[in-house]
Image (tube, rainbow, N blue to C red; front, side, top):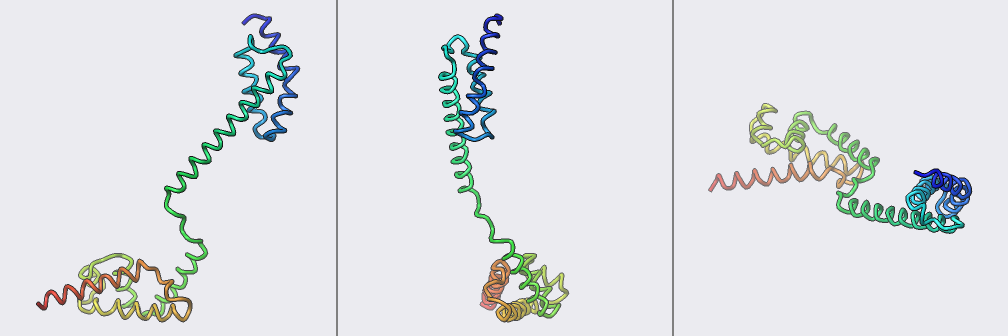
Length: 192
C-alpha cells in the first residue's frame, strides 16, 4: 500500500469519522452506530480511488446504504423468526393455571380411597392395560374394570365442588373412559 493512500485514508478517517458517527446515531441510535461507521470506512478503504473530494457526502451516502441494508436484513430476520414461530406448536397455557389444575387434581385424588386411586393412576396416567394394572394392583381384571370408574366419579365430584370439573386433565379422563368403553365392547363381544 502506497504511503499516499494510507495518509489520504487517515486524513479522511480523522476528518469525517465523528460526523459520520453523529449521522448514524441520529438515524439508528448508538447501538448500531459503531458497526455502521466501521463498515462505512471499510468500504472507503476498499474504494479509496473512488472517494471524491470532499469525502463527507460520499461517506454519508455509504453509511446510509449500509444502514438501509442492515434494516432490511433485520426485517428479513424478524419475518423469518415470525414464520418459524407460526410453525411451532402453540405455547402451553399459563404456568399458574397448570399449577392450579395440578393442585386441584391432587386434592381430588387424595379424597379417593388408596386402592381406587392406585388403579386410576395405573390406568389413566401410566397407560397400563387392564391386565397389567390388575397384576400391579394385585386384584382381578373384573375388579379393575369397576374401580377406576368409581374413583373417577369421586374425583369429578370433589373437583366440581372445588372448581369446575372440566379442570380434570382430559388425558386422564379420556384414557380411563376409553379403556372402560373398550372393556365393555370386549365383554359384549365375548358373550356373543
